[in-house]
Image 1 (cartoon, rainbow, N blue to C red):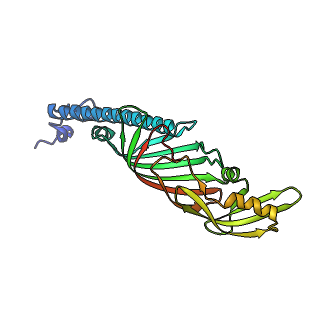
Image 2: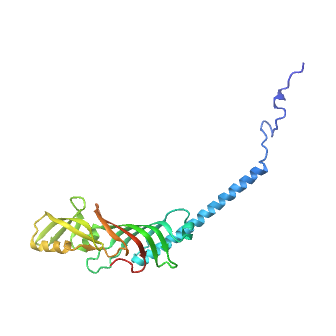
Image 3: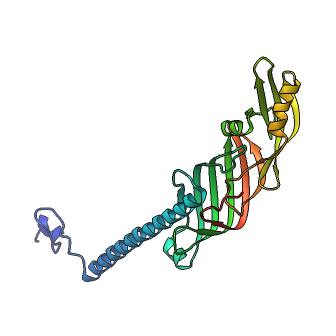
Amino acid sequence: MDQPRPDDDFTGEPCYGEGVPYASPPSRRRKHLIVVAASLAALLAGAVVVDRMAAARAESRTAEAFQDGMGTAERPSVHVGGFPVLTQLAGGSLRHVDLTARDIPADDTTRPLPVTKLTVGLDGLKTSGGAEEAHARSVDATAFLSYEDLSDALGVTVSQGDGSGRVNATADLPVIGEVTMSTAVAAASGNRIAFTGIRAVQGDLLPPLKAVVDEALAEPLPLRNIPEGLRLRSVTTTESGIEARFTGRSVTFRPGSSSA
């Protein structure tokens, strides 16, 4: 009776060299799928690049329009939200744009108050044919006013107060002395910050010091370098300054469009 040979277990198994199984080349269908997948990946990558270029262009135009309108020394940072941007541009408006500007100069000759930082969220932003104008359906903005800038505008030293929504105002006169007053801050009509509930917290309120405090706090402080169409809604205090929140509808940024 014949005995099986050791190699019989591998009879019919294609071999590639010694002990290496043979791998058949990919079928034509598989090659076709690989080519299609690679082509789609390349097209998608190209579309993303083109879309990012369109977004960068829209961001640049928006920053230029805002800088021209508000007179900032540096262009603001702008981010266009949503993908793809090309379809938004084709529709004539951008769904949402975030903008951050710093050191917006004050135009007011009396008690000028620059905006230290302005963050703006714009919905439904449309741009004109030129870069000099931009229009938004609705806007939500927050202006940060540092205590240092507030002090320069009011003529007294302003710092964080002893309670929520309050600041301290310190008047100092040679020989006479120093007095610190606490006052609440609130939004007033005409995009102004009002000072109410004034009380002394340190020092004697002598007539010369009272005159300085009255001059500084008696009248609401106007914010004259905010884009026209925005309305002051609320004012809150922080450790380093005041945050003023604005909202608006149908707001246009163009040269000379800041509120007066």
